[in-house]
Image 1: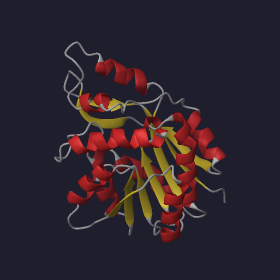
Image 2: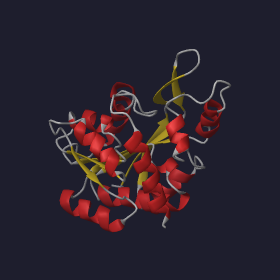
Image 3: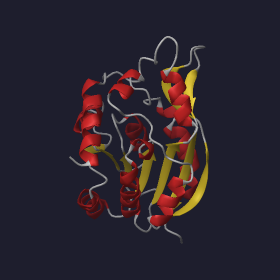
Image 4: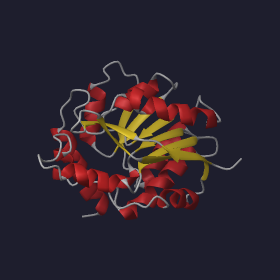
Length: 241
């Protein structure tokens, strides 16, 4: 069994069990707290906002639907068929399109690239959860979708997020309820250094055009009632012009 197959099975199990209601999943925060902040950082660097936008690792499509109100064509893709099922059921009007896609499989991404041409790409919290050996192929897939005129926005948890997650899991009262299924299915943050993503982008032929730090808001709460927000780094990347 390949690493990708094990990863797919973990996500299928997670999304089959995930509730349908908004905010029931740990990272499924309202777009006004997530994608809206990201777009404010991303849009100034877009060469062509009219290009299709790919939400890579779209999950249940919460952010995808928000993006579909702001771009002419949005495609949400995810490794998990169960996740894509959630996304389609939550979008009966078809604001966006959704499809199962294994971004580590070059044939899959080449097929999408042939259909869309150059695309803008949004990636939120995908790479740190992938196996280390899958991360460069994932970034290569982003580079392939971006082509010449597209731009990628990638946000990933920072190194310091892992101990923060571990602290949540070790609460005296037990892990927060929305964290439990993540741990049960083995979808915990992996060891990914803060320096790794810029290196992956460079190896894929992409230039970092802008970067910074931004808390990544979740749907879970601290014991004092405030939202859990995990430290993250964001990058805008594209071909050098």
